[in-house]
Length: 162
Image (cartoon, rainbow, N blue to C red; front, side, top):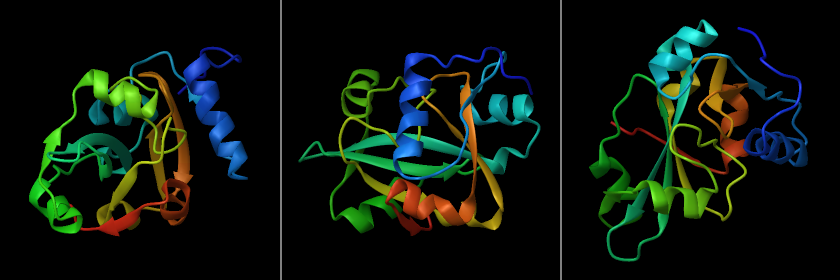
């Protein structure tokens, strides 16, 4: 895993800034290979797919509020599990909605640094690992973190997403 350049792209730098503002020393790196999917990221980084934090944006069906689900790379989100916590049905968010609420494109959505506050749910399975990897604003940028820091970092609620 090599950092392809010392200067971060604008999106990756905004994630680094968000991490720094939270007083965290996590370092964003941009890689030469894609980290767009959990499998790509794990292969590029050299970790288990389950250690990849997938950031998935949904929106509530009636109120159109964004919802962020941070899922383990091997898990599928059971939308009904999330709906129980929200009290409202979910629908998939499209690329335009995702960029509008997060400021990032699908494939590079980080767990922090969004344009607005987003209700966040964290997959309890992520806590099984000491070290995790998350997207950092672009399909090639990532940062690693300790699972114990994820809840406070993302201001999210830990639940079973399956």
